[in-house]
Image (cartoon, rainbow, N blue to C red; front, side):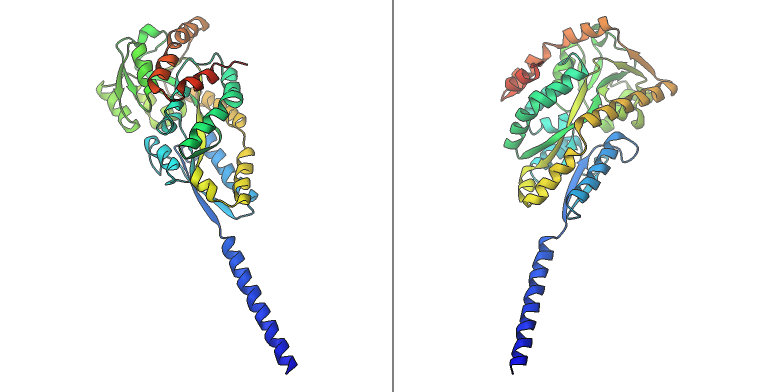
Length: 336
């Protein structure tokens, strides 16, 4: 009888251990996070960084977290994805300044040409003076800043070179993404034409547009340089991007998963991406010239004149945006 009781106790213990193991297995169910990006799917610094992030998250979480990457704007355009991340409809992503400015309007200031005297100065201000204030503004709107990304240099593509501010007087310029572009166009005497990316090439073909500002990694692969074959490398200032996650989604993660995600991002720094993007741009501009396009680099005197003309736009745009725009602008002016 005692033997039967012992067997019964053993069976109960095994059953309880099995149930506990089942609960633990459920607790370890793989967490999937959807990641959005406008980057092309292969052969570029952005896609390669996302591939490294996917692998790092898998490794840091010991297989308990998976990133599902949707590139080439599969989850929506730049106008859609920023607000969707803030509203937890998309878990996370690498987003443009224009997209994030729809959530936090003050971010439009980061795309104003002429704010910085050099790339090195811009990098230092972003990393040392802006990341905290930008992170706080995003937190209020439901998005968590995981680090800076990089769009690259926003140059001028059109039907003629634009070496001086007066060259833009009366030009029909595509304006998209934010107030910053519309104010910039107006300050140079250009006529702002609001068009989304799919409309650009047809607009150039019909004469509706003569100029657009965009990075070479978009201009060349998209075919834009065939209808806008003059590329003017104007201010040579890069535009940052934002690595964001939904604050609500981040808070739902268990603490070990939060830490794993942060460690994964830390393995690929903003400085590394900037270097790769800038090298990639040089390669693409070489390809652009071989394909018959003309690339115009400004002289130091021309560049100084452009920056001097554009400088007042910073305060104009800050005044239009309101909110914490002046505080952001003050942080951008910190050159230390």
